[in-house]
Amino acid sequence: MQIARELAGYSLGGADLLRRAMGKKIKAEMDAQREVFIEGATTRQVPHKLSASIFEQVAKFASYGFPKAHATAYALLAYQTAYLKANHPLEFFAAAMTMDRANQDKLNLYRQEIAKAGIRLLPPDVNHGDANFTVEDGPDGPAIRYALAAIRGVGVQAVDALVEERRTHGPFADVFDLTARTGGRVLNRRLLEALIRAGALDGLDDNRRRLLDGVELALRYGNAHAAQAASDQTSLFGGMFEHAPLPKPALPAVADFPVLERLQQEFEALGFYLSAHPLDGYRASLGRLGITPSEQLPACGGQRVRLAGVVLGRQERATARSRFAFVQLSDPSGTYEVTVFAELLGRARALLESGEPVLIEGDVRIEGDALKVLASSIERLDGVLANGGARAAAGIEVRLSDPAVARELADLLGPHGDGGARVRLVLPLGSDREVAIDLGDHHRLARTRRMDLERRAGVLGVVDL
Image (cartoon, rainbow, N blue to C red):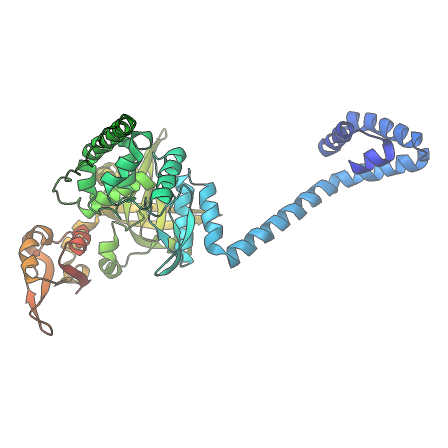
C-alpha cells in the first residue's frame, strides 16, 4: 500500500482496493489496477518499463508475502504468549480464564491445566473475589481466585457493585450484613442462591443448606434495612431521632447437605467440581480396584481399562440398525467420554441418570488425534466395593477429638451386613493417651459418606485401613 501511494499516487482507499485485489488474486481487477498503477507512476516521472516491472514484482510478492507477514505476526504473538505462560503463569492463566469466563467448558480445561502446573485455584468468595479471575497472595503462597462473574447466573454489573461496596466499607460480616449493605439494587433471590451454591458465601457460613433455607429471610432483612435507612434520612432532615438498628434474625438450625448433594449443586453453579470431587472418598479403593485415571487414557491405546467417574451428561444417537450414547464423565483427574452401545445402554440407562459414581470397563482406541473408549460394562461403584471383599474396601479409621462424637456417627457409618467394611474409632483419653475401638467389619459403608465424616464437627481425620 505504501509503494502504491508513493510511486503511483494512490489514495489510502485506492491502495486498499489494490491490496484486496492482490490478496484475492482477482485477475480482471489486477489488470485494471495495473493500468492505474503504471499511469500514476508515469505521471510521477517513473519510466513506463520500470513502473510495469515494479507492479509485476509487487503482484508476485502478494502470492507469498501476505502469508509470510501473517506468519511473522503469529510467531511474535506465540513467543510473547509462551514467555508470559513460562515466566508469569498465574497472571497468564488468570487473564486467559477471564477472557473465557462465560465458557465453563473452557474454564474446566484451564482448571485441569493449572492443577497439573501446581497452581492452586481458590474458590469464589464475596469477601475476596472480583468480577475477573485475579492473582491473590495467601498464607500458602500465590494462587488464582475464582471470578464471581464466572458463576452461572451472576452478572458483571451486580458483582462490580458488590465489590465496590466491600472495598468502600470493608468485608461482609455475614449474609445479613451482605443483604443490608447491597440490598435489592444488587442482590435478588436467584443471584444470592447462585453465590451460595458456588461456595462464595462459605467464608460467612459454610453451612450451605442453612444459607439457602434463609435466603428469603436475608433478603427481607436487606429490604427492611434499606427502608429504614431511607426513613432515617427523611427523619434526620425533619429533626427527628434515627431508628435503632434492626436486630438480625437467626438462620434456620439445620444440618448441611450431604457432601455429594453439596458438590452437585456446586457443579451446577460452576460447570465442574472445584472444592472437592465426589470420588475423593474412594481414592484408596480405586487403587485397589486397578482404576486408570482419565488423564492417563492417551497412553492406553489398544488396552482394556477400568475407569471410575460421575456422569455429567449423555447424548443418545440412533441409526437404522442400532442406538448408542456418548456419555461424559468426570473423575478427580479430569473429564472424559465413553461410547455405550445399544445392549449395554439398555441395561445401564438408570445408572447413567443417577448421578452416582460408576465403574466402567472399556477398550481404548486411538484413531488419529481422536481418543475413544468403548464401554463393555457399567456398574455402581459402591456395589462393586460392597461385593469386592476386604481387598476392595478394607475399611476406615476415624480419629475423634471428643469421645461424645462417637454416639453421633451411626447415621454416617452405614448399616450392618455380611461382607461389609471395617470401621475403627480412635478416641482421646487425655493429653497423651488414646484408645482404639474396633467396630468390626460389617458396615455397609458408602464411600461418599467419608467426606461427610471428615466434615463432621469433632472428627480430626479419616484414613484408610
